[in-house]
Image (cartoon, rainbow, N blue to C red; front, top):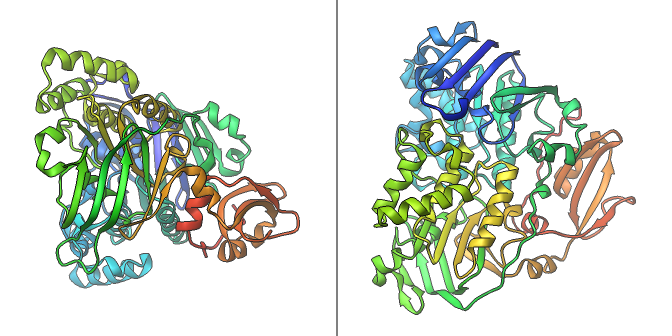
Length: 558
């Protein structure tokens, strides 16, 4: 199905030999393969070689052969490969060609010249299989990150390819959306498709993947069956720069509150022709010098709130004030103290990291001499100094996020707004980022929206929970955890009973062990006699307020 024969690839003008080296690999039909490793290890490069983007789109020196479905990718045009290999990118927006969900789903089918009757059949089957009828007829620009990912998956599935390649598919997804994505991949697996997933977050794939390929510095270091990989301890994974459990990302930093800085009064926002308000906030004060985490599922209104705080869109009603003054009336004065990292930020792919940051500094009106000094400092903080001459298009998803964090901090802002800032970062980078945010919070208000709860559990001193555009909880992590009426239990159950527990309890984590499956369950009473009560975490509280019983089939043969 997929074969690499002694393959080397080095990106054009890349520093430090970025690419992959000495890759000999065979992936048979029907396998779900997890590619893992730190950012820049070569995962994304490997996926680009499977879907033909290398060597046809990304320039560089390539040796050896890559064969996909009997075709040499180097000798085949992209349009020849496309019907056999579907790609879901880290940023779904980057693969969209239209502006409506319906037309995007069928775009690929139309592009390969599929008959109209077949297109209609594929469309109907895909919508039904992925359960996305509620998204039809919508503008792609109105969708949440999770909804965009669903449409991206649908556009690929509609072609019925034999191989599906996914690059960091969960980087912008909450737990509910990850569960949904897992269901889609399970259906693809049962239908015999080959699925290649480059991913940092491993826990959701432990009962789905057949095989794990661990990469480091462009080389395949280990190629293991999933049962072999499961034997690794959390400490082993940490040494490899990997994480398996949700709770393995914790940091140990806190900061103190300062005086109130941002206030919301009778505040709301509605999108044109939308039946419900996207935001509806009666009253809220956010202190200066605090790290405030806004948590919620995809579509809760987090990104809309972040865009509002950055004056990109105006409220329909009400006011947002900084130091008692309307932020929209302050205009450039307010934007001069603001740093913003959007969930999806633009860049010139052929610019180097350094040139890109210099360009952004000039837009922000920072003097060149000041900008050079500031950029050198920030590149050290985000661990990109040695890569500063690398072109943006050669960077991994995690490295691009770090560049985004650096550009947000160029003007040394008093308000730092971060929308899904850790998307695509590996575990070591996430720890580095959390420590950096703790350092930066001194005399600065940091607001970050995320669905990755562990990123903020130990650094945020204020938690805001959002659902349906409203705040239904504001306060400290400790108070939120104490608000739980349910308890948290750990228990071991037979593998063949796991699906029953998924359907009847909120299950926060599943770990396969020789005795069966170890479950972390949220419940008012102990689910089994041998259940051991555990200390509740912010992750548990989030699952309680936002989670749903899975109701999915658990494959006890994996």
